[in-house]
Amino acid sequence: MNGSKYLIEGPVPPGYLTDLAAGRPEKTSSGAQSIFLGKVRDDKVDEKTVSGIEYSAYQEMVEPVVQSIKDELFKKYSDLSDVQIIHSTGLVKCGEISLAVMVTSGHRKQSFAALAECVELSKEKLPVWKKELFSDGTSRWIE
Amino acid sequence: MATIKLVYFGSVTDITGISSENVEAPATLDDLNEMLIARFPKLSAIRYRFSVNRQLITGDRQLINGDEVALLPPFAGG
Image (cartoon, rainbow over all chains, first blue to last red; front, top):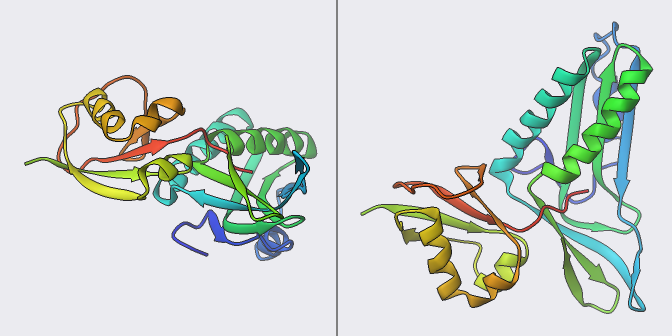
């Protein structure tokens, strides 16, 4: 973990969010928890294959942005009780997780809807940048 | 003398060659943008937005001593 509680150096461990959920057994009024795991794909670009992505972030801006995403979701989804967002910085190889989102609510419908919206908002608003690294040693910024 | 901190991210760092610096503050954000493009002409070929003190800014605004101004290329999380 680096400067922000929403950022993690390297890939997000696959069990990161489920461990977090298991550590909060007191939330018994919430019946639905939905998780999205975003993974690095081995895209092919001009005969070159992506081997990983190098992420960088404006760490000090991540926290207020996550808060604004949470505020927006809680305002829209009255059944929501928790939102967790964690994003990688540094190198994440193909097949590894770079973004994990979990939303908790009373029932499944709002949980699914809020999860999808949270992922979209995270991709749109988090001050994060990525550089695709190719197996031949070249790289390019993705915008 | 008013000083601001500039921070650069993503593709902007390839152009500036550094990730942050302190500079004497121009009066406004528009003045700063002109100053940066004069110094780093390649900036005019890419897209970026400004934040001041971690808030995205649309349009111009005054700069004051201690402001942290960031050049933000399009976000690409996920």
